[in-house]
Structure formats: C-alpha cells, structure tokens
Image (cartoon, rainbow, N blue to C red; front, side, top):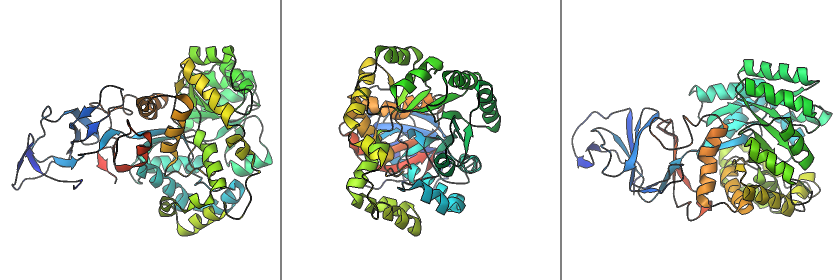
Length: 446
C-alpha cells in the first residue's frame, strides 16, 4: 500500500488524464476517523482539506472530491486530531544533569537544542504544545520561528519565565529566566508585563508564594485573558492555590507527593467548583525511574536520530556514569508512586478535568515518546476509557490553550492538524506510539 497516491478525481472515480492539480486541496481517504468529540468513529472516512483548514469531514461517498485534489490513502489507519501537549520544555532534551546541561549548551540553544526538540515532538504527532518555562529570548524566538513557518515544529504557546517567591542558587543556575515575586502588587505588575511581551500563559513554580500573591497572579492573569499553570505537589499547596482563585481550565501541574493517598473533601470540592484541570505529568517521574533502572533505554534509535551526535552521546553518558538511585525524584517515582496514583484515581472518580501533559524534555523524558507514554500512564492512574484519554490529549487540551475554535477536533473550519496512526488506539492505547504520518496546517510533515 502506498501512502501518497495522487489521483485526478471526479467524486471518487479515477481517471487517467493530464490535469493541473489543485495545490490547495488535499483529501485523506479511507481509514477510521476519530474526530475528538467522543462520538462513534467514522469508518471509510474522508477529510477534505483546503489550504491549512479542514473543509469537510464525512464518510466515503458523502463528500465530493473535486478534480485535481491530492489524495492521501489512509486505508487501515486511524485518523485523528494532532496531539496537544500542555506541558513541554524546548530547552532540555532528557539529560540527567541540568546544571551540566545549561552550562555546556547555552550557546547551542538556537542552533541545535530548540530545533531538535521541535522536530522530535512534531514527528511524534504532537502538533501543538505549551512550553511552561524557558529563557525569554530563546522561547520567543522558537515560537516565532515555528509559528511563522520558518522552522518545522508544533504550534507553540509559551509561558516565558517562572514566577517564584524564592530564587536559590540552584534555581538561578538551572532556570535561566525566573522572576521573583516580592508582593501582591509586584505579582500583578509582572503578569501585566508578561502579557505586554506576548506570553500565552502564566507559570507559577513555587509553593512559597503566599495566598495573597497567588490571588494577585490569578486575578490579574484572568483579567488579561490568560490562564495560569501552577507547579504544585503538596496538598497544602494545592489548597492554597485553589483558595487563591484558580479558575476554569487553569492547571495544577505535577500533583501528588508522598502524603496520604487521598485529598480531603475541601480540595475536591474546590477543584470541581472552579473547574481546575489536572495536569499530572506522570511520565516525568516514571520515565526517569525507568531509565535509572534500565539505562539501555537511552539506546532508543529515535533519541539518537533526533539529536546531534555529540549531544546524544552526552545525554546517554549522563545515565551511565553515575548512580542516580539517590536522586530525590527517583523516590517520588518509586516509593511515592502508589500514593500519587491513588490521588489521581480519587480526582478522576470525583469528576475532575484531566489534561494530558508530559513535561517532555525533563530528565529521562525525551520528546519523541513522552506524550503517548503519558497517555498510557494517565489511563492506568484514572481508569478512563481509551476514548476519554484521546479526548483529553486533543479537545480538552485545546480548551486549556484557549484554542478550541482552531484546534483539538476534526471539524470544518479548524486547522488541518491531523495524524495517521498505524493501529487502533481505541483497542490498544499504546498504538499511539505508532504515528505513521503527521499533517500540520494541511502540510504533510512526515
């Protein structure tokens, strides 16, 4: 079976004739369409693309395909919206030692690091991402390079710097652009400044922020039309943030530590009342533990494919030349795992909204397979159906980005961000690792 068969067509009748192909029309024909809305999949589906947008979605025989349309043969495949990851980091590529990483590669961010991350994510079927913390100049640069079409990568939405109360030596060395918050008034001023700079979301990364400072951040961000992603592990930190005013589809990032395996009813009630979304980034811990226990996972040919040879060698070496079992995140990933997963199941059973967010690029968590692994782990944690996980990774994440009018489902008028899976993720969720082809804005990427 050839993927890209180009035919001259009238409706679906093949004619062998010389025609001028309609450069702005493409049809995906055959395959099973999962449109992201949760309804019954469409067998023998057709998606007609005009330019960078979807023109029609339906069943074979129900959509007229104009003469000259380019045809993509999707027989035997699953067709679905491009994946959306609402927690990534372009400036790290899975290395175990952040201090070494930033000290060694700061001058190669634009030439090697950021483009490598962008390519790896898009090749994995991730067509839109939200970067939650990076050097301001570099992250604005990569966003503009990608969104203007000068570089291949996923549609990019950014937070820019972290907002924190405390800035330790480790923080200043590791996170190159961290803005300290001095007071509620300072918090408002920094949110307004970030909005004027053009960020898409605000990121808080410190449970030492007071309730008053968090309230100022949430209130000002919402006034500016921005959502907030808050890096929080502890139950007390979650409760403080919720009381401070987290709103609909703001996200709690990471979630869960070694405490008792249940949250109290006040936390659950506040999460549900405020419609706050859970973004647990399970793979950010599990992936690190897996590589510490099995360093041969760094031999993954996709990792080697996506990185310059010397950088790949350094990443691989970072897991081979040190005993990382004492790393504090290893304990969270192993000893604390049962309690963390129990909390996520409690939240799911209570009806909380879940995003799919991988924290890709972090230690042991390379971009090329972070999101599909997070999807599988999220199902393990929450008990959600395959379809519910697929919706979370597409439609729900589009809502979190404030982009549902453009992204997240396969519907007329939306961007033609589409992936073809060589398998059936409704039967086997792990088939999400088998992304055969990626289309972004109507352009075939792979």
